Length: 129
Image (cartoon, rainbow, N blue to C red; front, side, top):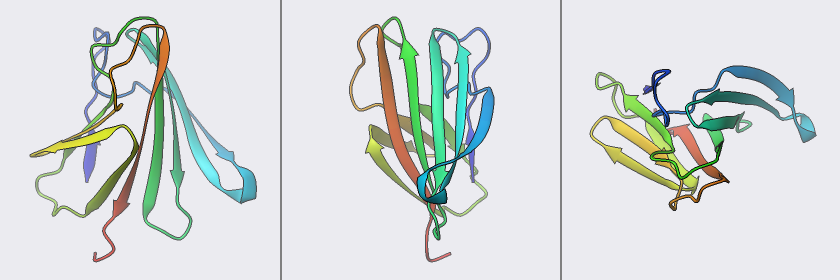
């Protein structure tokens, strides 16, 4: 339903986090989550993706460590136009901007240099499908 928009090796601030390493971990109470890290451009990136037990819902928690003010930070997706919109989204940290077929999940405020910037969002299937 959504496709991550990726950058190139030449991008200082790629359109989506350049996550390269994946591990699946067991959290407290037996919950499981995917942990991802990567490095590209001018940032070190990390993310966790956790399914919500008993629901068709994923929680994305993303961060970027950077040494200068970023030109762009966020997660950028393209919605498959052939698919009927079936997703519910919610921002827990940051903001969501949906414009036609492009979905942007971004930090809430501009970031300072030498900081870690974080955004967190939820994507779920609509219950009526």
